[in-house]
Length: 443
Image (cartoon, rainbow, N blue to C red; front, side, top):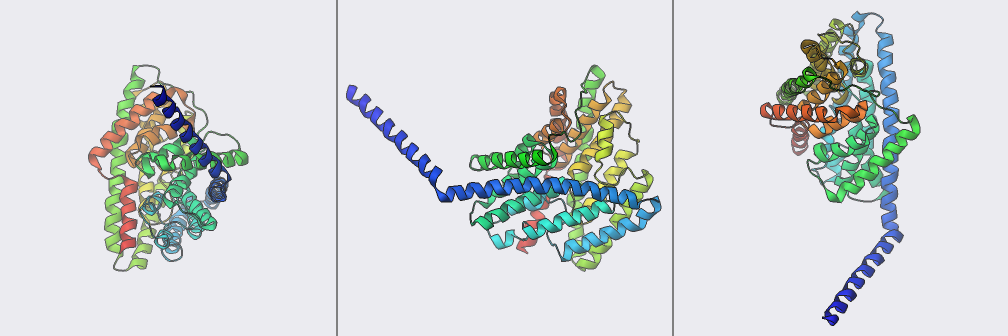
């Protein structure tokens, strides 16, 4: 027995010694240091570009407001701006149209680097940023957060190419997560987004990459703009029974409206692809002009509140400033038209804004006490219904608003909305759109 024990101890000692030698070799390995430096440099670059993109997006919206000294101007400016964006996305920066998240998802399924570069590249990064800013400058109901995902994934891949290293799938995931984290200043949401939406699974091999990328991108963002909460800090909580009744109401309505939006976008995109195939450029420009006109009419009817990301409207609703009853349906329509138009732009911020309007309507109908809390519920529910990512939804709303007392209600509303949405729209919006990009590349 003593001999067996000594043999076991010796074997354990040898295994530990081997493991320590491997760790020392990895620590001193030039190749692994090169990989680390590429990852660190790429993540910091994602954070810096995301901050600059956010600043430029705000300036683009300010420019549109200055130009719009008369509400009638948008009826000409917005359609023409949409047509210019669609033309550039079709001819100069092909692959930049839409949110950017479907491109990142599709790129993870590709093995050929040359084909992948048609969806993720530094050239497309420039185009995505410029055309998103142009869209905001002409009043489009789009956000910068989805494009930041494509930008982040492109930067990480670009850094890998410069460093001559592989691991593209993991780097795309890490860049996407870093983009979300830096865009919203929500590190937890970036990690959850990578797991739940981008990969649809927890991948232990890439978890370290994602974590490091999110941390470094977040540090770069903190160094440039400081620590901030996207929607401020909300102390709202559900107080009485009627407030809690709003949880399932928001969940069901958010799921239904989110599924409707996703279904129209998925089906509409399929119909548009067939219709534009006859005369691709001419019909694409015609579609963009019509969608731009719809966005301008929504803005005209809402006194300009539905233009742009909708950030100000959502934050105002959380802080207790009432939105018009027509805001949610008009913002829904404007965001739908912007999404189908073929111009670059994301869904995150506009969807949260529509959800804020939905929460405001529910609060008004039920006569609740904590209106700001119900607005947060509407945001989480509608966003969960659109993207069918409930964990990302309640985590991102919680981090963006600092509403620590709303974790459980937000979770319930997001899960209910997800269940309702899944019953009517089986395909996830981003993954359905990603299949379109893969089909185009194969064709």
